[in-house]
Length: 293
Length: 293
Image 1 (tube, rainbow over the protein chains, first blue to last red):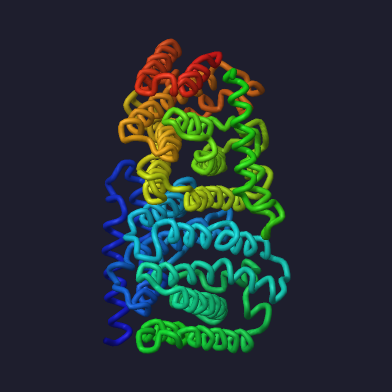
Image 2 (image 1 turned 180 degrees about the horizontal axis):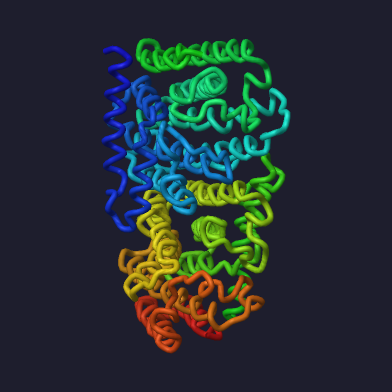
């Protein structure tokens, strides 16, 4: 099967599963459930949940068993976008090609929508089928740490605090490691757990996720500088306008491109252990690098 | 032991346990960990965690085993206060007698502080010692449902949407059931779970928590009308000024007082099952009703 076909198929499965896990739009109070669905079904690429499923497959597991953790990480990702877009944070009016939650609903509802998506991610974890090595405790711990104040939220805080300041390459690395790479690593690790991965497999897939997450963020930084808003589905040049710390700004465009390639090779190296079963993860990694940056 | 002595002792144990569960204030990035501690150690009454411990004792359990779930519910409660105080929500400048998080830090940091407290509540659940009947799965599910979009967040949304509108008694009840009673019920149920409660005990303690939560909220509504800001530790008359839906506004002050008493009797009735072991829960219930309203 072609990678494109694989991605489209997985995306459909993920969307159907998210639809099942989320309360119906009419559930009282309708405002919050409409808003949760508005933000979650806004045409996201589903990169993290697809990677979670591919990681499960790399460890010999089935996609169906990885779907709950895949949905949980997508809910966390969407919550972080909703809160990140708030006027008190990045103040972005467009996300995934549509007006952001606080533009469509009120600011207060957007805060609560993020809260609700964060909370339902953990509710979904409580429904996960345990494997021999990993139960709800291990999966809960993995997700809570990656989404917490020393990882995802740490990255958001450091990013906010870096605005308008000159940052070092080390500080920029800290932001990306926490804001992007930690949840990507948790996504593939949770997928691997759903497949009862061996400790070696779990470790390898985590290293893959970290390297891929960093590569992905460097490429996003580059695309913000080089692409149009239409193509990005969000306001281009936003990072520059907000004096955001980005790789092109700190180390230059050419060095940023080389860094993205270096990180992708590191991600690929982590997949050696999986042999042929790691094919989809390898393809997904290439696909991300092949974006026109 | 006098109830006052009991409360002071439990409060100290809870504060020490929260201090252990939270990252140190200097942990990078320091801003978020300072803000988490600023909001969490702002002199809260620790009502929910004390009730969780008393519920564990009513089911024959030990306070030490209930401390993690007690801390988790206090983190959820504090997160909900931090987000509720935001300018886009209730826009309150004082909470627990001190300037609110968004007044001391920036609005964006206040959003992230609430997010971090919500997330760490679930991290703490992953560390809970399982009992014969209840593991991390059951406790996680209990907390995620109570804090989610059909309970705690539903109450917040309904409360926001009721501002400036005339609401029915039924709508007001819906707000209080979800905004306050659901998390109080979850607090005592989680405490009971940590004590390996029988299904009958778990059910009874949940009914107690619901009735007490409603009574507590009705009393809070009354106090907002009748007390000074200094005594409340927050801006008095705020609900009236914001045209909030409150019991005194909807059914009148006298009827609200009778409702509070009726609900407290219902809470006490739910404790019959526990006999002498339910003493502390009974005393705490009386203590809440005896507030000068």
